[in-house]
Length: 191
Figure 1: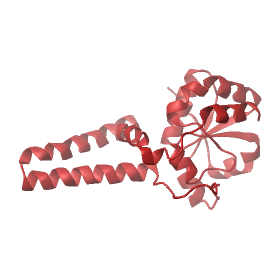
Figure 2 (figure 1 turned 30 degrees about the vertical axis):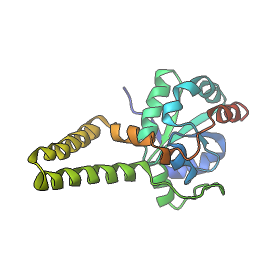
Figure 3 (figure 1 turned 90 degrees about the vertical axis):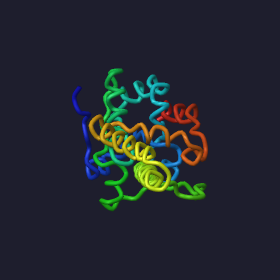
Figure 4 (figure 1 turned 135 degrees about the vertical axis):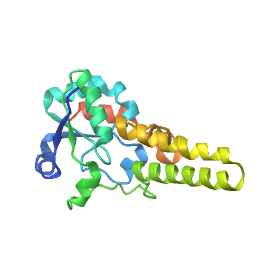
């Protein structure tokens, strides 16, 4: 399968007014800061939104955004399977802010959530360290936990997917408020 079209942050910034921006991160990540005008359709709700995204694509270009570009590339592939053209933001919101562009932060956000990649690094590191310590202090079989996490990280890199991120996305702290997908889709239809 071909790689999705990619827009750099400069081009995306210039064209922001003419793009329909879809942020596929978790509601918590979205609430901690998103591109101006972006709508939150988490990756796990993308298939439900296909009819509305098809309609949006008929009216203009769609830009899909996540933290680093990985989830948005996956979302673009799903959209392409359903004959919906979309581009991804190169480097995601990380590169957007690194290039000096502001993120919109709703006033209702009480605390900023950690980005998904940071959560994955923290969880993987904690699990590996725990496996090593328990392997030394309790029983060597606990080192299999560290080996399992390492194998998962290698698989993640080779397939450009992340099962740990999918699991972490379901945790309550990543869903401080449920995305009102129906309201988001209604807003998408009215743009």
